[in-house]
Image (cartoon, rainbow, N blue to C red; front, side):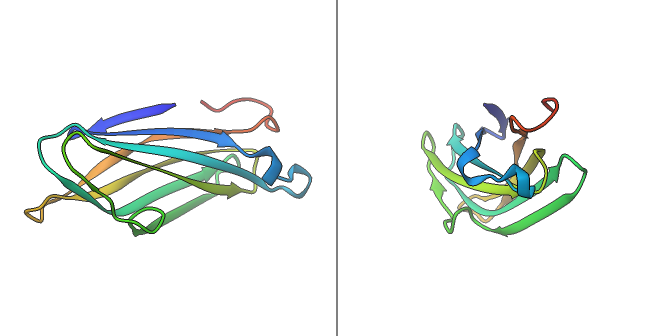
Length: 130
């Protein structure tokens, strides 16, 4: 698991290689990643936008931006958390993901929360990245 805290918001990510959805012979590798967002701060925040930078083992980069996560823009009150699972396919047996969530306070202030960089490792790569 990978974890990082920014401004009292802790992001924890656990990636899992999905062998049954992957086809190494066809150069298709799939991972799921489970994210837990915890608000340890004194104020309520809402996750407004996401940004992901996905780099596969060959150096190919994909950037993804959009509103919320998995179709939601969750509100996290102090002491509460939100969890979701998503996934990504790659054309290589390994990769790295990093990114940020844009949060908004009730007063309209926005700030970015760093998503910890995590590696996407599969048993089909010659060595582990991270």
